[in-house]
Image (cartoon, rainbow, N blue to C red; front, side, top):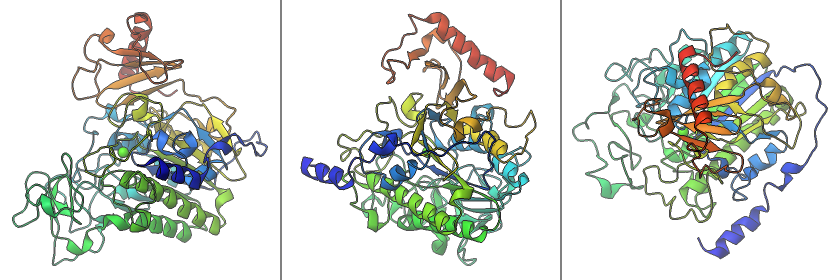
Length: 514
Ligand code: CA
């Protein structure tokens, strides 16, 4: 992008984050307050540096920047994994996903990955008297799995089986088949005369193909994403049928916002828990035309603006319903950013000096901070201090136990084995976290305690692993080396071994929380 247009862009939004230092807090009461409603908005692949109030490019997220001033911006919050499925598994079960094999990035036709017998975040919310809803991205499987799920009948078990009273979801991701919405276990707009079939092995005769028909695509693929073609875009996996049920990518954000708002309106008289998982800013990045060109960064930047606007519309609805003082809102992301994630969407070419992971090293898929240190903003208007930052250590796996505590519901000692109750830190930026260490996973595992972070040897294979000599791993001292540039394991072998032993203990014990 030209310097002129970049300056114009920055000028048009001013310095979005300066106001974070503003202090307009209300006095905290000693007693724990109980939010009547909880709204949890989870972006997809949104980087720490993609949210302007975290100090990166101004103007990308103008609503969130202003909204964050109503609450607390956390700077040391982490996704339990650097990819979608394991993070989401951990959020809803309170259990690190590496404890359950088969919870890596799921195919679009995967079976429901969460055992309906498990304690889950939505079940706990139900038990506390809330109506529970899930809208948007799922990516935790549904039905019985490849070749066994009939998409033309009620899907069982559906996502509702883990504790949601209402669900309106895409099965997996926008880049995976089936490219349809599923509401309470039923494909939306399904025509019985045009049944849907899905597989991940081979295309159906006569169906378009992302390799053969590449010249027809409205967004070309860079790697993968070249199997089924839906809405002119290549996908991972194949499908046929269901023409009337297929989504239009450009409308997806609006549809999720509308469903989320409708859920809140319908349940305005009752306590509710709503999970809104946006597709933005995951690939394919195909925002509505009104956002095209809204940033100089191409579809990736425009999708970020669309995400910001989705948050705006949902929060404005909350306020219009008069529920903002009754509702704890948490906004975060499921993992770090990825610039080129498989489509020719000019994300690399137009990136300029925007740094999606800010000063953190790494991206989605990696064990470095850029892979799992995520934006995390908590707002409860009039109830928690405004305009504050907190350095409390949090993991998204903590939400289950934390929301349970806030709603006054206990969970059994054996349930949610990795979910810490961090509600005090969530409500009060002056309070430290009850959590001292975090484990993150991508292809490899890392263990961080205080300012020291250990990464297991990255030659052990494609699975969270502790194989090989621990001293072949990496050790970073985040104080003074936040960007993880200097592996100091040769200088501090005993510290590395201690962290490695702590990781082994966490695995062996089957739990990490008190
Ligand atoms: Ca993701």
